[in-house]
Amino acid sequence: MDALQLIGPFKQLLTMEALPLKGALTDSQLWIIENAGILVSDGKVMATGKYVTLKKEHPSAECQELTGDHVCLPGFIDAHTHICFGGSRANDYALRNSGKTYLEIAKAGGGIWDTVTQTRKADKGTLIKKTAKLANRHLKTGVTTLEVKSGYGLSLDEELKILEAIQEANKEVPSDLIPTCLAAHMFPKDYDGTKTSYLQELAQKLLPKLKAENLTNRIDAFIEESAFSPEEIAPYFKTAKNLGFNITVHADQFSTGGSKVAVEYGAISADHLEASTDTEIELLAKSNTIATALPGASLGLGCNFTPARKLLDAGATLAIASDHNPGSAPMGDLLTQAAILGAFEKLTNAEVLAGITVRAAAALGLTDRGKLAKGYLADFSLFHTNNYQEILYNQGNLKPCMVWKNGSLVYNKHKA
Ligand SMILES: [Zn+2]
Image (cartoon, rainbow, N blue to C red):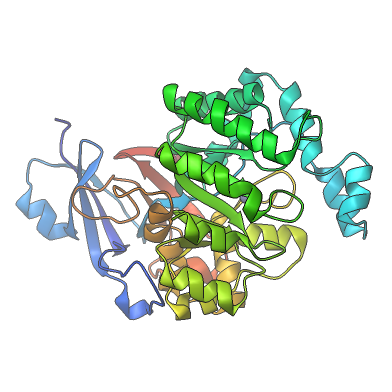
């Protein structure tokens, strides 16, 4: 057993314990310990409490005593990213902001297909390096767990290459990368067949391989007029479910239909939801499917945010993720985006912070993180302030100064 470590004191420690999974939250529901410490052993939290009390009760603990004002939060969890890709879409972004339409950009060689081409050209080593680099950038913003989707391969071999690259990148970074297969991102235009036959091939050949090689237990699909219809995706989800995969859906981004399929197939999360109406909100609120808002995509495309306030008031579980991708969400800064979503949608501190910690953990089906309590992973960040409200008030500009992952200090701004 590792030596017992006591870290602190922190002006405030937000444990994110005892919050309901669903519905609206007030800041008075936050469990805040003042002058707190965390007792860590074997990468896990042994106890949280007053620093002086923990010190007295555990005299053998090795103390990492901090000076100055710090607020401690659980490591952030980004439940939706596409950070394994080749190339850049800076030109697309410039064209879009100069008023070009989606079709004009696609005709000029841009769009998702451009990233597919660049990603296919990149070898696995290049993808591993790039993914690790981006994951480490997220780590410095306090993100200690990061979902990463494939979906820029769009053929059996290329999708496998990407998922293997994510698996390798995971070994090279302190954070945990959670892989998801998004082979149903769009219909590959070089595929010799129909959308239905493409999805059939994925179901029959790719899904069993993912299981056999233990590459992922999560399947995602883009349900949209430009990608796949609910009817087209249904048999694919049926097979995925029978094989024991968790399902997640890109739903209701521009048109509705996706969240209904998500709920029907018991998806763990429905992500995007910018186009969701009261009907979809009601449906999600009554289900166990977590609604994941992606403010980075709204910012990147210059369009409306997910109706986060309405979803929470209806009783849904709201997670917030960055959707970091080269096309519509190039920023990749979860804290900034979550803070901005909070300002536009009128979300409490508790709702925003739960959306990137404990509720985001639920969106990934992870029960060992997202809170700081006995037995949970010792993943946490410190912010140089004496009041947790300063964190969202600074709209992402107040970054963590220290980050711990599995009980190890993995980022220290003071020494960077
Ligand atoms: Zn996405």
